[in-house]
Image (cartoon, rainbow, N blue to C red; front, side, top):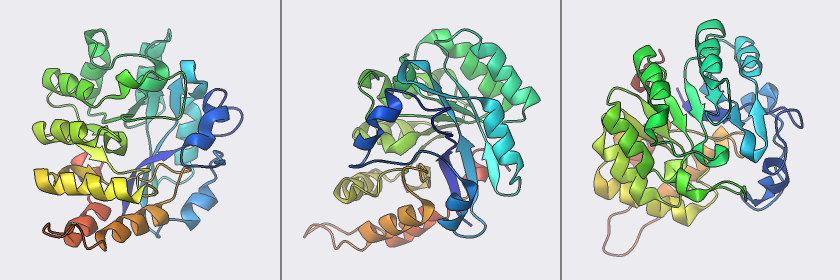
Length: 280
């Protein structure tokens, strides 16, 4: 079974405004239809795929998906989908949204977008958020790495910020999105240190050299088991992501160095991520 730990729900233009919508074509060279349709997702993923669905809240970047929309979307496919709530802690009322999304809507994790929302995730001011998630077993999916949005400060996307969070909250399960690209080395350093901190490989396959290089670092540091499969749908699909990973696995490599371990790539594709994140 494949577990996709990183897919989105967007209904455009209701959920996605500017600058996010206007600048999304920078994501990987061309216009992207951000409207999510279950039938299209399912047609581009193997039967039986289990999927984490997140919305997103970042007022600064023009993105706001109500948690009730995510709850309704996953309720229509309860055997396939797991919903996360989203928070923008720069906005008033986020603490009420946290409790409502968890207790009333039954959402099972939290999506944070520090760069898009414009906050430092290592700031102790947000320890109440992290403590709540740690106490209630809500895994975090945190955007790390670069973006196409001009108003989003890159410094808040550095994976090293989550090192401080993990030190203060050692039982908190976190997934650092996109292997922190292009700061993969920093992301690897963080996930290697902490038992419950992982990284996903979503939205990387369409930069194949970068993905190959990143996975070579993963191999050299011995952290293959800390990588989780994700797609970042609708920016790409499960099927394309799987093929992209297998494609870089077929690269012979640099003379004098071992190629990527194709068995480890297959284990990554089929990682039991729900067990690791406590979502069974």
